[in-house]
Image 1 (cartoon, rainbow, N blue to C red):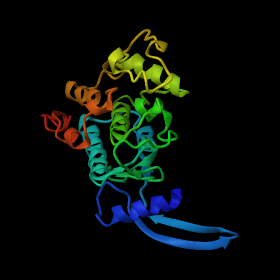
Image 2 (image 1 turned 135 degrees about the horizontal axis):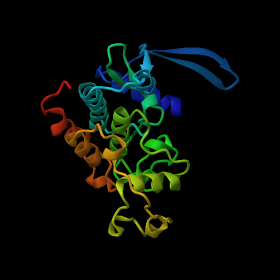
Image 3 (image 1 turned 30 degrees about the vertical axis):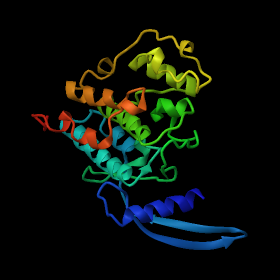
Length: 252
């Protein structure tokens, strides 16, 4: 069912030929083994994923490069969201980078057309890029993708993942250590089993301490994405209109 869902989504997306979405070129049927039908999805060839791209740039990226990569990620995500699709698994391994440095979103195995107030399965998004509402088992929608993008932008600056938790609880602890613990009135006390007072923030460190090279406007954009309350999180379209993408100089 996951494969069929991915094929249906890719067919739908292909018709728009969006430059930041990987193209599905063909679907080939292989031999049938028992009740299983082997299928091959043929995609356009893209040289590397963003994780590999980051590894190959050990000296880091210029502000201009990070802006352009971020802009293209947001363009692709805004396109998905405007078509009522949540990717749900945005991470460097699922963002492809062409030889000339352009981004294409890939791997739609977890993507889902959403309805409001839906509650999807919790087995989504690599733990390190997972939004708090997913970690807490709450209903969610498009803001989960925005959270993941915020984590990825910091990684483009620092060249290492921002939150490296080992369990859901540990992931939340690492998030709060950097972003601070949410106010008690923001905590969904009646909807989750984990209590607000279960977390103690010790030796808090800010994002701009982790990556001193993050400029003020980039920091502002990142913090608007990494907001605990998903209803207060910036949208992809709002992010594309953020000062970060318009300020001068844009080529440093």
